[in-house]
Image (cartoon, rainbow, N blue to C red; front, side):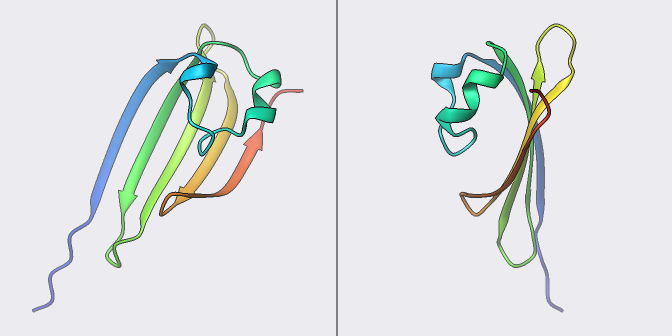
Amino acid sequence: MNSCWSYIGYEAHDFYHEEIDDLLIPAEHFEKLPNPLLIEAISYVDDKGYEWIAGYLLEEETRRKVYEVWIKNGEQIAYEIYVD
């Protein structure tokens, strides 16, 4: 029998811009985002060992989504900015 292990995790933390890694948000995107941000991250390791992270950045007071980022194996593969 072939056994596979998967892991799903969730975290939420408040961060100021200077505390956030460029992998999560490129520096040029910060000018459009509030400071501090509430970051909710969901991580998953699939049966092939690939690590997937979905990060949702929320305005701290309203919890309105302002930014979304997708990371696969430590490389940003997609993002979306929801503010002008």
